[in-house]
Image (cartoon, rainbow, N blue to C red; front, side, top):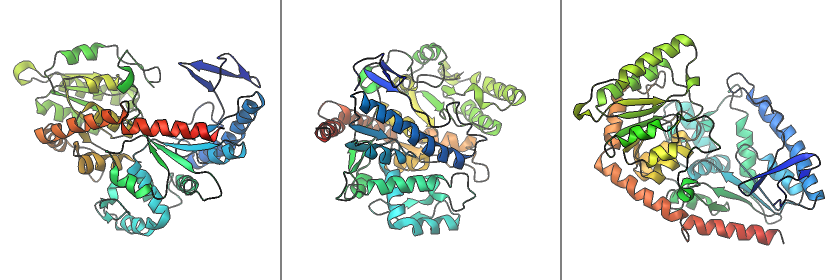
Length: 441
């Protein structure tokens, strides 16, 4: 959009990196938001108020300088962007959906007739209660996005429900205004049922899996990583392990493991006779005593004796996950099942042990186990959500079985075909770009 990488808009600098120009706007929390102590309801109201005000100013200044915006793409929990964009004459508006389309289908039908069925299941307090969503195979309550379980205004996440409702309302366009598109980070073969249930109502464009390594290869750490990697020692360590032998364990950038959970995983790895690579962030420990206890557990697990000298363990604070999952020695991925991690694992053909915690992760686990057959969902302990030693060992055995490994390899090929030149996601993206071009003329 911007030809001059050093230009400014009304005093606001626009900078360019890799052919993309960036101009900042404020959401009212320029110093960041403390998710552990902050008021989510206040946060959402401030983001809406300040975000709309400062984004309006940015769009106005861009137009005044001869760079009118022709397409606005926003993500979930920011539905107010659509109204701001329309007010400034933006021709094409789209939501970049960063969760599975199955989760979007659940939200859509929840607000379009299925709310009562979900509430009945929530009232039963049975995570295995069946919930029927139009167009989808039978789901259990635990398979739905966790925010749909909110039944009280006192719930800290209750403020998110109106945001999702507004997003769905924007997608339900009418003949008097242009549609709001959904640009979905998925591919047709991954979620055919959910796509079929939505497409009569919503303009869905599948462009995934959106993973840079499918196009660019691996040339070191991503500049967008939240944490520094532990050098490349873990990659050299992986080079010493047999094919498909390593259990890779990572619960993402925000999850915090209790000392009990760390102990259960460490014991499972000690007993498993399998090498493992475990990402455990330094901010995982609440205090020094807990940190020292966890270090002791990890040292014991990492130093365990393995048959045929193929084992051993390595613990790092962060790593290049795409490079790890692409490594031939990795045999399965124990994950919280966030959507990015799920897509990366599928695109690399690595079977999954899913240990979901909240949001769309239960839906992702359902896709992994029931819809795709590329892994298994682990059963956490009911009282505290801890994944126990025996259950983790059982799930690793299932995930590394021939049947699951074979299915994971097939899904890898489907994912890569989708984004290759002429593949389904590639064609969808090109058509969406053409719509932008038509809308701006």
